[in-house]
Structures are given as structure tokens and as C-alpha cells.
Amino acid sequence: VKPIDRQQLIQVVADVLEAQAFMFADEGDGDLPEGAGPCAEIRFDGPARGHLALALHGGLAVDLAANVLGLEPEACTADIAADALKEVANVACGQILTRIWGEEVVFQLGIPAVRQLDAAGWASLARAPGVAGVRVDGVAVLVQGVTED
Amino acid sequence: MTVRRTLAKVVGLCDLDVGDLLQAANGREALELLQGHWVDLVLSDLNMPEMNGVELIEQMAADPMLQSVPVVVISTEGSRERIDQLVESGIRGFVRKPFTPEQVREVIIETLGVADS
Image 1 (tube, rainbow over the protein chains, first blue to last red):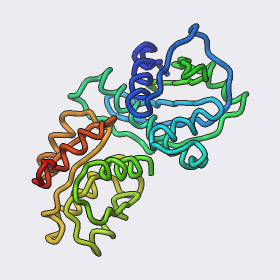
Image 2: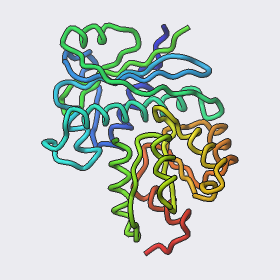
Image 3: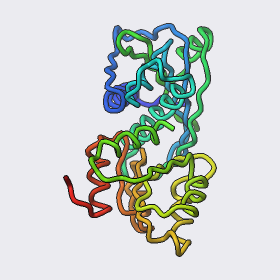
């Protein structure tokens, strides 16, 4: 696998979180923070094949859903939070593909899926290729973008 | 679900005289709804399970009862070639995600030809 450009990945996630959820991401001290929580993954195929994954620690996915949908966090069930995370991953994937490969090529995007990462799963993702860590209001976020041969 | 909820909220904020707002989880559900309801506008994503937006648009174009219903695509799609293909297939508008409420409002007003109040 080959990592997608880290800075572009971080910038896209920051831009999408800001535009869709009024959330502001920063790199913090550049470390890969510990955490556990839902992770959305979406595959793409075209001039390059690979995937993007987006993992949010703790209850950040609930806050994300609340912001995206204009709901109170208490009204956001786990399903609603997972769906909002899938949608944000979907948009981030579309944006990163255009920024890297331009508008003249065609990609097929898969249907996003969410899985729960425990602390070990989170740590495993943090060690994987093409992963960058950011924080949203101090809460850990991991984003992974890789292409495959 | 997220996109549908968001769009329902945006349409509600559009200050337009909208009657019923029907929602479908994918292209197949949308076609089923369209068989039983007359609608003025379809807002559709592309990346959907079971039947995607391109297939929905193709099916609508092949159905004499549905081919005149305007379709606006709201998608993360960024390929100029793909968007051109959609325009050639008859879509009336395209909004790229992430979108603002104003973008959706403008394309609805433009597509339906209703007055901007």
C-alpha cells in the first residue's frame, strides 16, 4: 500500500468537518493520539484503488451527528452517529480524490461501512500506513488514506 | 439517512411552498415512491446501496411517466467527465458536497422556476 499525501489528507478532513459539522480540526502536537470509537471506511476504485478511513474517539461521532443534523446530542442514537460518520467519510473521500487526481478522471466509490474500534483496534489503525492524527476540540481523530497496487 | 435528514431541513428552510416531502433510502425505493406519487422534483445522491443514483436516473429516463420529472444530483462526485455524463443524461442540476443551504435553495428555485421570495 502507498500512503496518500498526509498534509492533503489532514486538510481535506479539516475542511469537510468545518463545512459539514462546524467542527475545527488541528494537528495538535502531531502525535497519533490514543482512543477508541467508531471508524468509517470507504473504498475507491479508478485510476488508483484504495480506501479512506475516519475514526473518532469516544462520543465525538455523536457530536458530529448533532452538528451535521442540527439535533441535540441526546437525540442522536448510535445509528444516527454512525450514519453521519459514514457521510462525512464519503464526502472526504470524494474531496481527496479530486484534490489529488483532479477533475478529469472518474472514480467509483464504495458504500461506506462503520466498525467499532476498541483501544487495541485504534492502536492498530494508528500504526497502519497512511494514518494521520488530528484533534477536534481536543478529541482524537484518526484518518487513513492509502492506495493499493 | 444523514443526507436525507439534512436536505429535509434545508428544504424546510428554503421558504418555498413545499407540499409533501418524500424520502427514499436508495434508487429502488425512490422508483417505488415515484410509481405512486407525482413529484415536482427529485433530489438524489449518487452513492447509494442497492440502486445508485445513475441507475435511478437511467430508469427514470426510460419511463415515459417519469422522464419529465426534473432530477438534481447532490453528491460528493468531483469528476467533470461524470458530471458531464449526468448532464447529458438529463439532470437539471448538480450540487457538490459539502453543500450550503443556499446552494440547495438556489438549485431548487432555478429548477422549479419558482419565484425567490
